Image (tube, rainbow, N blue to C red):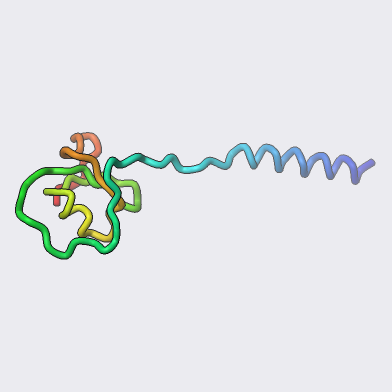
Length: 89
C-alpha cells in the first residue's frame, strides 16, 4: 500500500512539474539573414530592426549592415520602436 502511495505521489509531482515547462516564443522577422554574410555594405540609409540570437532588437542602418553581424538572425524593415531599441548600429 505504501509503495502504491509513493508511486502515485511521484506521478502527481511529475505531472505538476511537466506543466511548468514552457517553450520560448519565436519572434517572426520578414527577412532572415543567410550565409555567406555580407562583408561590404553600401552607405545607403534604409533603417531596419534587427533581431539577434538573444532575442534583442537593435536598429541598423540597412539590412546589409544588420546581416553582416553574425549574431543577427533577421530583420524587419524600418527602425525599431523606442520601446524595444537598445542601441543603433
